[in-house]
Length: 578
Image: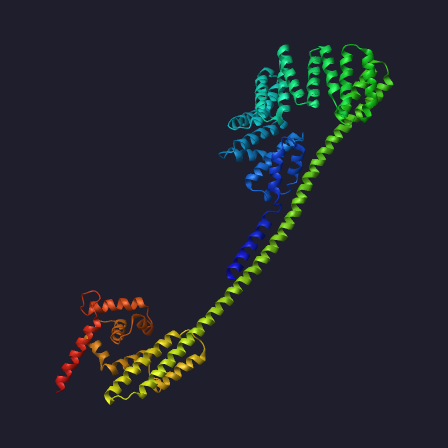
């Protein structure tokens, strides 16, 4: 029962401590799920990341560092600002300072570069991208390698280094080709990037081949959306190259493949601008009218602003200044609204941070309450345990006292029976006298042992029983216990104590007592009880006695030597008296 009680106590204590230190036990599972679906469903991954409301307390240090990387990763993939996510730099230091897990090192380095990219620090961005490239090279994650190479290419393109970026885009395409099929879309985008750079560098055939390969891949996947994007990109590239016929062909093909109603207005704008460049007035008028019909229903402010600016410019060139002024006002309002929307997003981010802090404060308060409750519970359990141990100890002590008392009573009864039996035995006067002395010594011996055994018993009735027993045996109480023992031994062996003191004055007091009681036939344990010493002290005393009596052999019986000397002395005294 005691083991069960302690086991239950430990289990309850650990459970309480775990609840106190981990306010959100499901945080680890949410983090793992977010990492698992990050590439395919970044929006769902972000929801799981945002559901972890107290990462510092709910996650281990390693998990917390992974959370820092996953948070930037999810926000970046959902086109949310990451410039303030500076905690990822600590995560990067944490992972790069440890051996193993090169994939996590590559992710931390890459997304640290993404944060610097948004801050406009392109030198630091490239440095972290290159570190990520080195870490990724030691892993089997080809998709991650492709991601890093593609973004290095984009960074080089931003700085007008298209020829340098070309090799990175090609590497990205090769890595994505080795990745699982779910990354075929990224491979197609890489092919499009290669084709775009080749086209800008005048390598038209190679550019068309690369873009066509990407388009063929999109067709093999039956990905209408990707086909539409690639063909639209082709049309824009051709438009920039002032190859308007090819641009129109690919733009029409892209429009045919498009099934997103929200993109229709963008196509109308592209068509209107394309035909305006080729002076196809009727087509320009047709798509301008289409734009006037759909502009108010356009949700995306950037696209709406572009459309309104185009319509204002177009009507102004046509001489319709009233209409142009109206569209210009709407364009200005759209620009203001865009600024307001950005401000709202900033306010929303601030509010989200505030809500996050408030939520943490609530959980801090709840955590403190749970800790107080746990401390109270643990204190009660500790008190109950101490009380149980105390009661159990008292029960054991009472049981030992009862057993000791029972042994005492049995010894007293045995002694009384021996005395009664001695009274009924017919022996000679001299033998009876000697036998009586022997019995008296035996009773004294047992009485002394009983005193030693019952020294810790505090019941007065037990002590009174011993006192009554000694009064019956010895009459009235004699002197000290040791003097009584010496007198009893001297009665059996006349003047033995004085004989020892006279013949062996070199013995100490303890050695004298040990020699006298050993001669009386007591064991080491019994002697130790009578002289209030340990058995080890008694044995050491016997060793010293042998040496002082001149016995050189180990284990020699000094009692035999004492008996011989004592009896010889008694005989000599007898002869002198005669």
